Length: 149
Image (cartoon, rainbow, N blue to C red):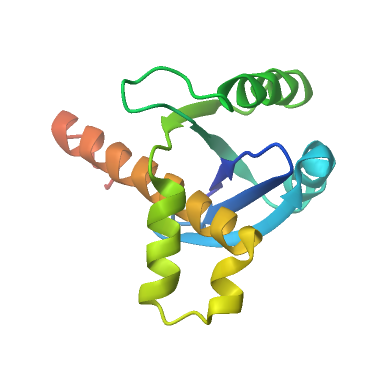
């Protein structure tokens, strides 16, 4: 079964997370310089089968786009041009960075590790992916299509 990849896009760095082949567990993958992201994804897609991509869309509390949203939208256009067969879905990423910081703290990460922005980006991508998987499973449960035989 193909994987699902999540992107926490940033102006400088981008956090990535991926599911296991059964699409049950979200795991941190990598932090990549945003300028190198398309090339990284090209190489990753050559090694792994990815059925869909989820990208965090930065929103304000009033549900309007944050200042970072135009950069995310520009990346989505690049992605669609380079990988037209791979669907990309937006998911609200409000609070993922603060939740990622809390997760690192709760997990016992040392102060040095918590201060590395790349670690926060990867955990944020995991949270985006986990939210997507949860909402996907809820939609499947509501429609009664479990996908099992």
